[in-house]
Amino acid sequence: MYKQILDEIDVGVHAVDKTGTTIVYNKKMMKMESMDIRDVMHKNLLDVFMFKEDQSSTLVKALQEGKETTNVKQTYFNNKGREITTINNTIPLKQDGQIQGAVEIAHDVTKLERLIKGNINQRVSPRFTFDTIIGNSPVFKQVIESAKRATRTSSYVLIVGETGTGKELFAQSIHNASNRFSAPFISQNCAALPDNLIESLLFGTKRGAFTGAIDQPGLFEQANGGTLLLDEINSLNLNLQAKLLRVLQEKTIRRVGDTKDIPVDVRVIANINEEPLEAVRNNHLREDLYYRLGVVTVFIPPLRERKEDLPSLVQHFIEKYNERFQMNVKGLSNEVIHSFQEYDWHGNVRELEHIIEAAMNIMMDDEEIILYAHLPYQYRSKMHMKEKLDPISTIDPYMNDMKDMSAPLKDQMELFEKAYIKQVLSKNGFNISRTAAILGLSRQSLQYRMKKLNLKMD
Image (cartoon, rainbow, N blue to C red; front, top):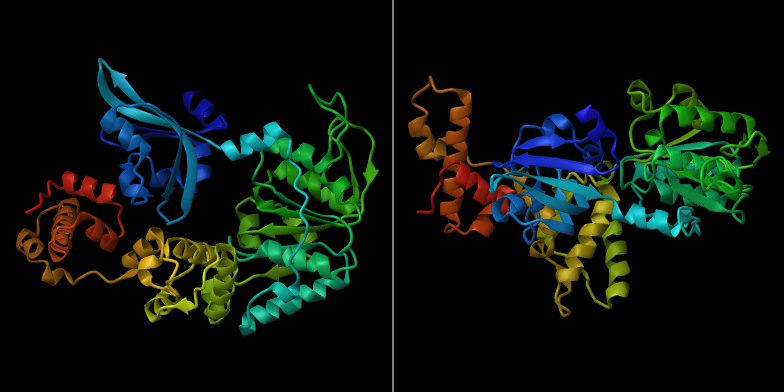
């Protein structure tokens, strides 16, 4: 019952014991951090998460300082390098005056403020067209041509692509090139709100349906004659997907609490960030809804499969932020160009834009070339992790201790980790910040590992 209660509440809960090892991690926190519970439970949080140079874990601070903090904004990275920002209340847990652990409660403050102000409905003025889409690689040009053909009819469209590939850009372009261009274009992220709210939002409410309910049209009625974009359709629960399928088939909606059907003429474009058949197999997407939505399916390739488009994308973002920041940046250094070509771009075009923006934020006014040192810490740390480690044979302390071949694997791994960290520290004059950057760790994570391995500065 205790675990079920924790998993049902709409806040993230993460608790650690006095060693920093996770002992409680609920479903909401898993969703916020895009983590599997097996990657977090019973592991030290500094082995799992990475923190920016100028920030430290609020949980670790609660353990070390014993102070309670409220409404603290924290940005950090999960084990896949994905950036996460939360607003936390962190409380040290004490027994007999001694700190025995800490608990963190994370709130989605942005969502709460939006709900309080009543600004749930988001009507977008679609500003993108096919002429604004950047990319000349053969694979990308083929996708653009496929999407253009979808503008001739009012068939439903399913746009498939990883996060950050530009799915909404394609959706707006399809709307603007269709005969519905003068009608409303409304966009809603299906993962942004809980199920009970998203149903009322989509289909509307009837006065008296529940306490405080009023006669309110939903997004389908508001988009009548135009286009409704449903982002992350695979995040809707299966019951809501069944109701959506009924609307698509019958072209009528029924407000929550009402008995009357209302006809609607809406073209639905749905976005999904996973392979559709895989989503069907994993029960993230109803098979019948997939076949109904996927009359026209547009697959947007990730940036790593169209790196020929990097120069034009980089130039576009430099020009965008030159105008916004009143700067005169000309381009990238050769080192940055090579680095971008080697990078995997898991965050796709959105990640590229954020990196360019971040780099230009720290450049001096008279600098015209983006250097590797200008790139954000999280990018550089991920690139360092890609670099090959020195051969084991060069780590003499480890090789000497390895002669005992009866030692358990865990002990051998600790010996290697200790020897390698010590060697990198030595090569960098025992500079913690520089060593942490090369190892792809934060200062706090490196210091934690040194303490755990009983590694002292020589």
